[in-house]
Length: 314
Image (cartoon, rainbow, N blue to C red; front, side):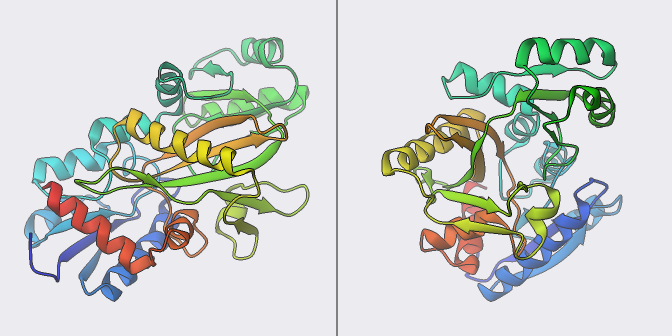
């Protein structure tokens, strides 16, 4: 273990559709690491980044990245080749988590509660998809790209006439999952999994938005657009079950250090696990730091713990 002061590179940006959000997360992370007493260097994920990483004297890397290649195992593979400790899941776990279809298949094998779905691959006939979706799932559906985050490309409750154009847009981003629309509370649970310790779940967060709104790409990052209720206004046994599922999903995917599981909980308290984020956002409006704070971990303390976990793992 290095001295108490560590040299950390915070990776940001890149060519992802979420690059701008990543840069906001990275600046927050760098400031938090500095507040924890470390030396943090921001580094843009560009063609020069591998050379810079190899040249710098580092103790660890914090990939404050969202979307591919930062969350899908690409950057993790690079860091493994360079022999650099880093925060978050490895290549296989990151790739599996980023692919919502593969992750859902794994969740089903572990008996975790997920919604039914229709999976469409690029090149699928739009007419075929338009016919198949209502026949299998009914008229009230959600269309989402399987390999994107931050609700990018997601369409909720398109009419039958809108399904075709929405599929065209979503399929332009890769394969697509279509699920039934489930009315209920939007819920998220962070998991902390430090090296050498058992993983634990943060308090359950209920996400509330204005009437007629939902936690889309705008409401995620606009100050004041959403309210984070901690703990969620649910019975204690339901909150406990949400925490259990979040940890179980984290472990099923083979993740480490941190993750955040997103859920819908119906009015009858029926739980559906939607997806898991392997590198949760760290922006001023992000949910993972709120959950950590509710668990007694201020932001600099959280980042210090994550960095030391990565270094201890080696």
